[in-house]
Every structure is written in structure tokens, then in C-alpha cells.
Image 1 (cartoon, one colour):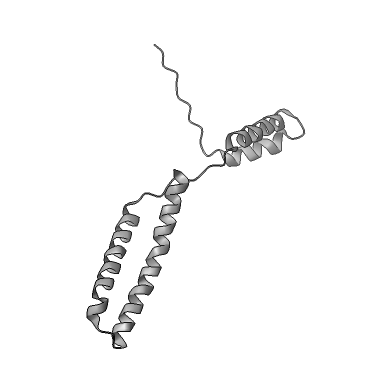
Image 2 (cartoon, rainbow, N blue to C red):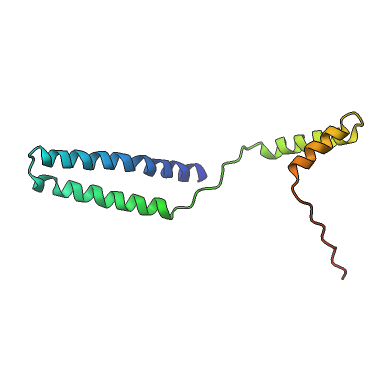
Length: 114
């Protein structure tokens, strides 16, 4: 579903410049002497579609990022590697420094005493 929604958004975003080009062609045709009555319906339909697309794009939320299917496994491997680095004396200091760059804040909360 996420991929389909993303494809729909891209299609709508790509359609807007095409509509603008068609409107420009219609205006140029009128300037070149083609009777405006022939192009009136086409211009009206293009403008209505442009308004519809603009409103839909403005009201559509950006979909969340698509995560790699193996993201959890990769994360688990990296955490295990970091843990091993923190345990080994020769890599402990470097691993601790790397960990400090990843963590911006640690908040301790007391356990509920019920």
C-alpha cells in the first residue's frame, strides 16, 4: 500500500507540469488564430484537473519512509557488534566515544512504587 501511495503521489506531481504545458499550447493556439470556442472545453477541463491535483497534493500527508525488510536484523547485528566492542579492553574507549555520539540524552525515571 505504501508503495502504491508513493507511486500515486509521484504520478500526480508529474502530471502538473504536463497540464501546464497543455494549457500553454492551448493559449498559443488561440494566439495563432484557432477559435477560442474550440479550445474552451479543453482549457476548462485542464484547469479543473490542475485545481484538483493541487488540492489533493496539498492535503496528502507525506508517507512514512519505507524501511528495508532486513532493518531489524541489521540493527541487531550492529548493536551486538557495539556490545562486543564495549566489552573488549582494546576497543572499549573508541566504542564508548561512538556510543556518546549517538545518544543525546538519557532520562532516568523512578519505577512505580506500588
